[in-house]
Length: 105
Image 1: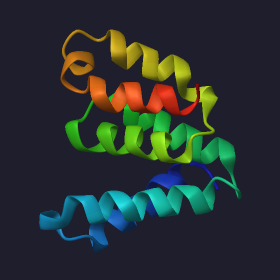
Image 2 (image 1 turned 30 degrees about the horizontal axis):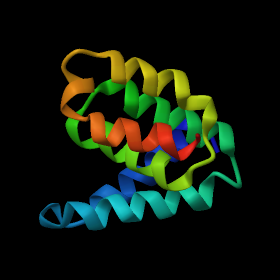
Image 3 (image 1 turned 90 degrees about the horizontal axis):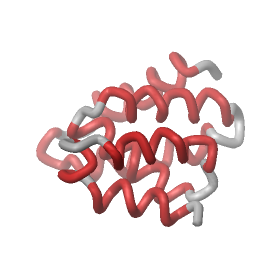
């Protein structure tokens, strides 16, 4: 799968989800990422990297949650470190960034 196909799979999870149940949607995305990473690691990594680059309150934080749960995506460490260094995003979402960084040691 390509990055675009992974993003489309994530989008289907978002579309199926109930906006009032944001945590449920995030869990669906995590399950999708865990399933897809064995089929196409690079596609999942690039999709998560894209979401991180958006610095979007919802999508970037979900990406950090996915990274924190999957725990074996060290390729994204430079992206997490850039987010952590960002004066606004890094301060507001330090918990999620630090959780993702800790997940890979």
